[in-house]
Length: 197
Ligand code: URA
Image (cartoon, rainbow, N blue to C red; front, side, top):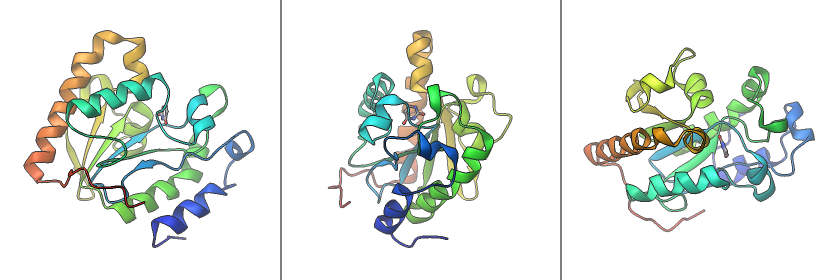
């Protein structure tokens, strides 16, 4: 079933029971940002902080992500949209299982269909493998734009990986600078619109 507006989609998603992750969740983490954004970020799945607060990327990794966004004049609430491959927290923060991803991805596809983003940035390996190509080597292929189904896609290093491995931070910043160049080249609308919900 495809929902034709954001509110109906979110309402349905918040009561989802399509996979076992619903049993352990405190909150469904639908996404954050401007539903008119032309630039979308996709992570892997909620961690503990996200499960508690109901918003993607709100832990230490999220604070780092906000810094990279700010460095290129982007902002999670006004001019981008951020979601995850799975909307409920996997136990012990393990990778979401293939069947959990399969059960959840229609929500993300419906988000794509309504947003119609010009650019999708995959945050980390799990999102890049699922959305770009199953054998992507993110350490080699981050920062490279590829067109898929008419949408430009790029993978970058996951903020949590950068926390573990700070030596990769300059490479991540370069990815965000490339993103900004692409936004300007395509003329994406990244005005700091009021979030109209
Ligand atoms: N990691 C993710 O991939 N997504 C979140 O929302 C938080 C941490």
